[in-house]
Length: 99
Image (cartoon, rainbow, N blue to C red; front, side):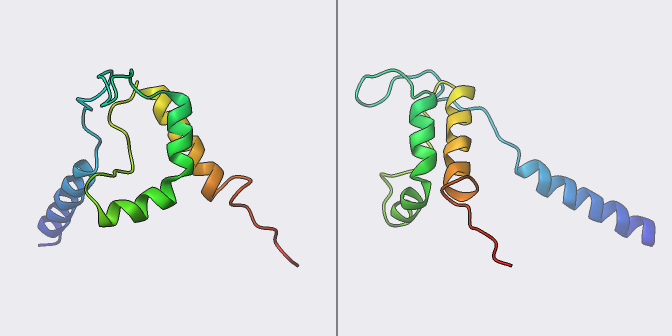
């Protein structure tokens, strides 16, 4: 009985974890609405920094999303994560510990 429960639990955990895996981005290297090329590092950095505001706005409208799918791939992602870390964990989000 314990073995069956352990196997079932392991399968459920595996299913839940696999559902979180990222899929392919069909918008990579496609044109944006304005006809410009895909967004790169600097746009990723900017959009990562404005994530808190963008997230709140995206809750109330369908025309704003927190991540640009028309990007050039890894460099956009690096900028995006760097921008997020600057706001939440880097110098802009750091606090001094008081002893």
